[in-house]
Image 1 (cartoon, rainbow, N blue to C red):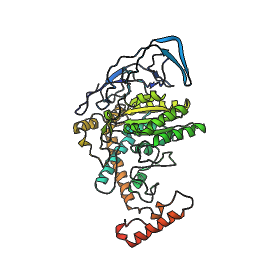
Image 2: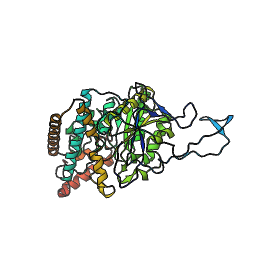
Image 3: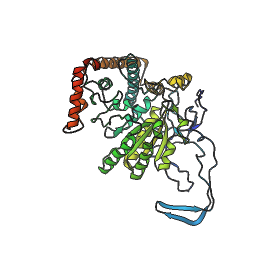
Length: 471
């Protein structure tokens, strides 16, 4: 269906599915040992499929065609193990390192914005579709301007969501404000959707006195108690087990909500990811794990991270229902997350979603990705596989959008972002005292001594410290 260029890795095939089906963590009633696909509650059905060739999703030998092991069980012989009865076999056979076929990737729209034949998805209204598209354009425009501001020396650091706008906005649109979000650092679109103003984005990036974090965090580490969006934490994957704890709390309080945590493919190489999945499965925690599989953990490609069939396949090992979705398809992502959320809350269970996408930009302003991947590959995904372009074709074809709307939107968003930057730059920094507050109800003596020491040092050597930080 799509022929992608490749200079760095081999192609590998994914079966593109047009049905929203979640891969079951358990064996089917026929006892084939391979699990099965669970159709979520609702009206999802359909049969057609197409072939997708994602260039970046080879992971070692997972794509090889291996024989399915067929055990001959000894009749009426079982091991009554504490975890459940296990059938006995007289044959010594090892489980294959990978399944016979790769897990399919759910998609709704083709590259030209047409729904695939027979596809079933969660419909969106004209108003919702336009809001989703406008938010994706806002995210793209904001990223471009803030990235340029960093290159001008006005910001110390920045990272963009380029190529992953659909995952941000479509998933956010599928959630409720009652759901708790525990993000990584590439989900600013989620908090924007929830009502976080552009002015506050700028305040956080510049670390001024209006920043909710009082300038203590590095840029791009947003958070809002009001919006149930927990502040970003720099260490990789720490938010994943924390999300399970939040979900279990919601379960205990019988809330009609779930926890949602985002992370990249690189996070799955951390122990926190595996501990979190096991924790969630055992406790039946209503948490939705959303993995942005964008092919790269900074400069490390996924085929150097794991040999499994991506991320979704790991869910079955931990007893978690899972799905693989085209993260560059806003409608597919929206439909999958809506279904995942519904199952997580109604059935009180964890769900793992692997969103297949591509990180078009450098990892951050500290990175130059052309040193480890071909420019042609980046440009291909940027132009031919853009989630924004695809969704625009869809809404334009429905008569909901035109070139005039596009020009007006982009001009308006650019003006808003530039005004937010200009305003945030003029605001003074938080007081030096804020370095020592908000931890203890009453500041202990050792911190009082440290505060006095720092303030004395600033007064003695004023040229060695920032002039715009009030003492």
